[in-house]
Image (cartoon, rainbow, N blue to C red; front, top):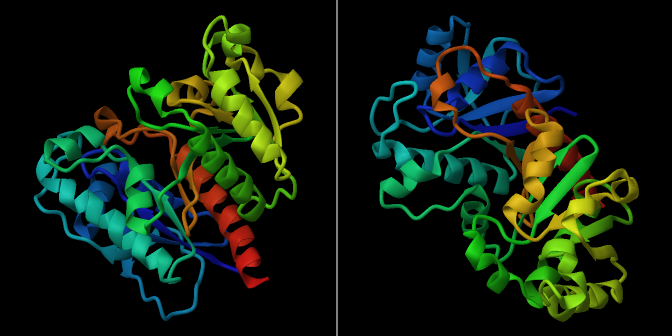
Length: 333
């Protein structure tokens, strides 16, 4: 069965359009690729990269078919102002968010099977006067989900985070039992339903160095994390922790785990990116759709140069394809 995947082109001045053009040169087998973005931008970037590109309007009523080499399906969303590779302008921030809205709505409506998002520039969106902390939070709000979970995955390691884009000083106050139970329940459920893991085994990091050292380096593990894990174990979840983050990411523990929950962004994600940068994807769990993304930013200095590594995009598409097939089988059962 051909999987239909929506791809947002991301920040127009960055490498997102380049990645889409490069993707057309070697489309993943068994996948119909539909880019949500400005067609003229994609044609200009293809010309700049000296690569062939043909675009065809996406017709949701037509049967799914694999993308031919050199082509992409297109859902047209016009730029607000013309753009130059590498040169940010806040005038196109509404365009970036509109591509996300339209792509998400198409997947919610069942016209496409999964969403893969290109990199966006949070700063320029906020410069436009639009509060935006990231894809994860935006998609949660757009889909009406109170709680979602950010997880990055690379071969051999999956890392989710309890808090996402928070200043480090705000993290301890954000960690509470209700949050941890919600996040771990979503992680457990989606590992089962979207990854096909019958009985997920999850490692949980402590918040403090040495997981609090028995309370001498902080009591969050004793007062908050351990009670939350105990309540979830009573419901059948397989949880190990809280463990010191500096020793959790070793073969002794990872060899028997399906995922790790870190307490904050820079506790777990640097380890994953060291292991698999360029071969990993960002995944939003807890949505009523499948959504993955690349593991990198807009790389403005590389836009239009042809020196872009497309490995993360291919991994994000492959992950979305696998997740969507598990999800569709679950929904059909």
